[in-house]
Amino acid sequence: MPTSWWIAFNALVLFLLALDLGVFNRKAHAVSVREALGWSAVWISLAIGFGLWIGQAMGRQAMFEFYAGYLVEQALSVDNLFVFILIFGYFRVPPELQHRVLFWGILGALGMRGAMIGAGALLLAQFHWIIYLFGAFLLYTGFKMAFGGDSEIEPEQNPVIRVVRRFLPLTTQLHGERFFVRESLSPGGAVRLVATPLFVVLALVETTDVVFALDSIPAIFGVTRNPFLVYTSNVFAILGLRSLYFVLAGVMGKFHLLKYGLAVVLAFVGLKMLISEVRPIAIGPSLGIVAGVLVGSVLLSLVIPPRVKAPTGD
Image (tube, rainbow, N blue to C red):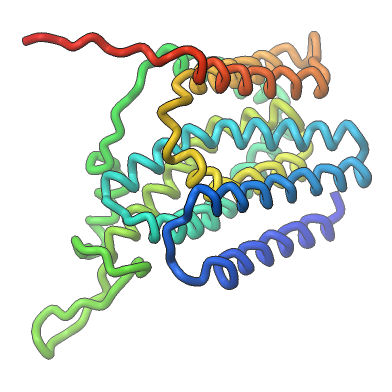
């Protein structure tokens, strides 16, 4: 890809983020479902429009690859959102502050995703056999997601919190939107910089995204090997992650079968990578299978009630 494309795309992303935080969301506020739906429509429309431009500039095949990568990344981010809900609930982050944490978390995620995508593309270019490791890893991840059960999230046991507490003094109280505040050690004495619980939440959000990227980035390389398409589809999915969070936060529990749909998607992409040299699957059918599985799992979740665990007696 021409270097100018990379520069122009990243400039566009920075411009959109500056508009978001500097103009439309300057004041901290609780994001309503209606507002989140509007922003979701904006980000999805931008992704669709960019895909159409990809089709004009790079051809129809590249357009389908971009859309497939975007759909896979957006779907896999749902699990990420569930963890965000647990983190915000555990630290009692008010709704009006959640948008700010997600904004800075996603800004950091863009840089980390770019580095991970660059490393993945370099490895695939130098060592083609790594595609089989990616495929096997996705098959294992899909199996674990479907049959591994629900693991409990215990933020206090997270090593990130231990590291932050070891190297930074922390205050136990929130101070509005601030990640750091100055605290007096004694009346009229020295002042030190301390981190607020909001910074701890931001650190957890960042590390959670890295963990989930270990699944999503290999999955997108199973759809397209073009680094530009991998990166841009990732970025558009991440940009829409905040609004998607506020749309789904109240209804996540209703999609109890979605994790099985995500497991099937991961397993399918893993299998696609493993057989790519023997029986490659075209991008059109791949896009249809991924979309069909995700829509099907959502519809079945609404039709089939969740299984109620039987109470256990002493």
